Length: 367
Image 1 (cartoon, rainbow, N blue to C red):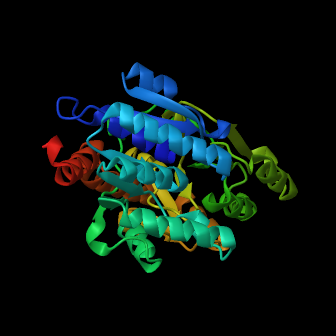
Image 2 (cartoon, rainbow, N blue to C red; image 1 turned 90 degrees about the horizontal axis):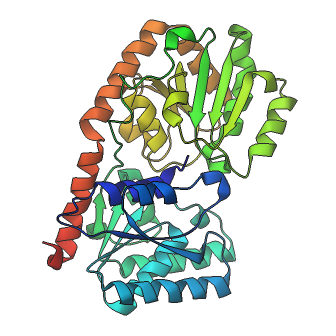
Image 3 (cartoon, rainbow, N blue to C red; image 1 turned 30 degrees about the vertical axis):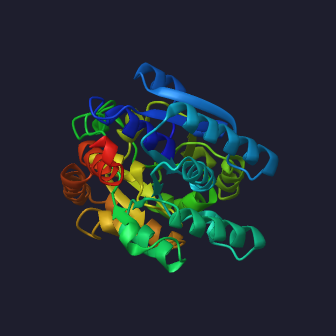
């Protein structure tokens, strides 16, 4: 299972019209808990370049080596356009593109966590992001909330931004794409799909479980994904006395089959650009309970396409889940409405077409 930005980048590389665009992907070393997409890229004949010096953590010697490697790749590739993602990689990539005088587009997938604290490091990141934004030919944001937050931080100018919401492959995630029939699962199940990191708020979900279990003694909770907080979250489940009903699946390549076992999908993020896993669950007709953060309210209208709760409110989350688990008809109605909104506005084809339009607008040689 590889989530978030790597999935987004590979989806673009696979689905862009190859008669119009020749696409190559340069990527660094991700976390083992995030899974890998290298084999899928190869299977789909996506040209890839692996740069081992390009890593998440700040390491000046390796970062300088990564910048040299990116610059060398741009010189060799003679590209018409560079599209960067993620904060540090995006800054290095845009610097290399500026040196090479190649137009550059950058996508902001969410509010940048490194900018949220008032530390010398965050101030340095903010200065770098402001410079990199000024050096970008165009900036993409996955939601209005992401754009507005960045503008408040002085990152870029409004006229630079285009809003391009995420898109998902409807052929993989649809109401008819069922693995295990829901009728064969004898117990109520709530689940989430996410990286086990602080911003995803899985600890809030675990705090809600005892209250839900009081009403639904057979409750099962499925947490699909992995990350640096896994051991801590497993300890929390034991401390709360709910470890026997909570399953941590770890990394998986078959998210769809897990989704089919959920009665309700939960996204309890503290910070979220938009939530691709949320869209995937909704596309399968699974009712969602999500927090009012980032671009989520732009996707879900509370009580129409799903249910929204406040971030950090474990009691409110428990109440919302108890209400839905006890009302199959409401789950079905909200699930159907959620599926319709994703099918209408968040398809892979729509996202790819909009990104392609930006490419051709900022790099005339591509037209």
